[in-house]
Length: 128
Image 1 (cartoon, helix red, strand yellow):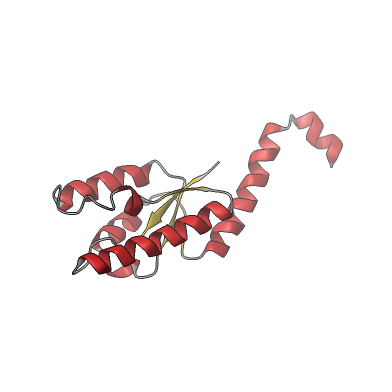
Image 2 (cartoon, helix red, strand yellow):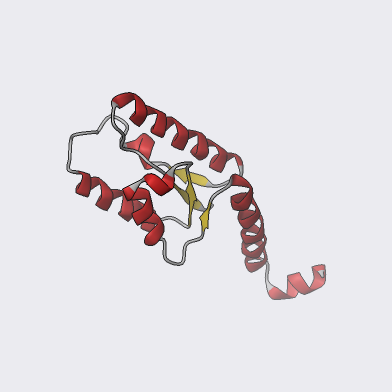
């Protein structure tokens, strides 16, 4: 199963706006699960941690989580987020998706490739 990092804004001017950012990220995470991948949503993981550590600590922590994922998906407004922009810049070879549809298409292609790898070559030739 592929793990998909949910990339979007967390911090905001007040607690209500932070909660709205978290809820948007959770909604995207839910849709990631619905297309068959495991979402990693740091927003939900640290919902009540605001003010407990420095922002740099959280940037480093979420960056480490992102590096362990197979792909990223953005949440609306990611462009305005310093942390999300860092994550996208550091994505490296990982694909970055802006829509669930694009992620779903990638997963379908990738899953077919993975299934073929599991079938011995002689068996694949028989099926073709």
